Image (cartoon, rainbow, N blue to C red; front, side):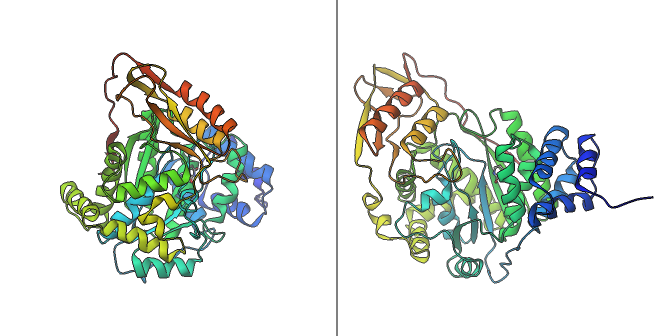
Length: 439
Ligand code: URA
């Protein structure tokens, strides 16, 4: 005799290492969306999944149920092929800001729904909001129209899109259940499937400043993402990239926008451009507008040398009510009142710039959030940061600290001096861009 199935029965099955049916997974996701499961039941289930894992079909069912927990954006009004890129997050990772317009300038529509920074990693939305007036909270109708009109739109997750993820992510954050591959896959992919992209390129980072510290773990996540996305009808490739030192020379919202504009002007730091091209090549190939990496690379380079990518960025800023003058003159972005160069304590070579140490310095300046409800200060951060392997003379700047107060600058200086090491010999270069999963 079978009676009604209560949340505790479904939780117990996963707790005991069983496999959940599609209906049980659907009940859990419905419970997260309509409140019919209590937070303690959702949290217990998340922990059971964390400890017991999920099979690939369970992960696929969870992803689909979360995708359908809200509205699925239909972008069939858009004529161009649609591609998006997602990064698992790092320090100084401003690639979306310039890669999206580069891809759009190459004939790919980029519908991008992005997130805010939390903890040590920054968020694309916070960076864009450093541009005065820039709106990231467009309605889904405005988003559809903009992608159709200019081939590019960068917004935040709306309340209608994958609401189950919003609820579950907030619980994962406070129940130590974030680092779980099936939950990460379902969280990332449910949003990407709901935003209306056709193909996806992942930047799966590994290293001290990444969510996944070990390359093997990052590879496992990349393989799972590619398998679930592809099975759900959204072809995906993922590039493994190193995140031991910050990407580029700027960490902080307005400072990173300025560096992205440099990238669009052909003056981007070498490491940032290497990651940008690696991801951009895969976007153009997956979207079907380039046949080979070399062809894609040539088009992406041309989008910069012709000014087309910069013009596309400006078009997006105008469309989303931002001040377009910053694209010509980044000094119009918010400026911190205190700017202090940090002198190198000795001569030699930069042997380490610890991404996590720099991120914590930026966080202490107010550039990021310790908790989801914190406000970020758009102006503060670190610029002109040295890169591992570069020579330096005693007294030359390791970076320039942009702070709200002298005291904040002093505190950040202490953290940065601990994060940046100078030695006698340059270290062997590490591989920044690794393998492509799914190619
Ligand atoms: N980013 C997401 O959107 N979800 C996760 O679970 C982890 C990173």
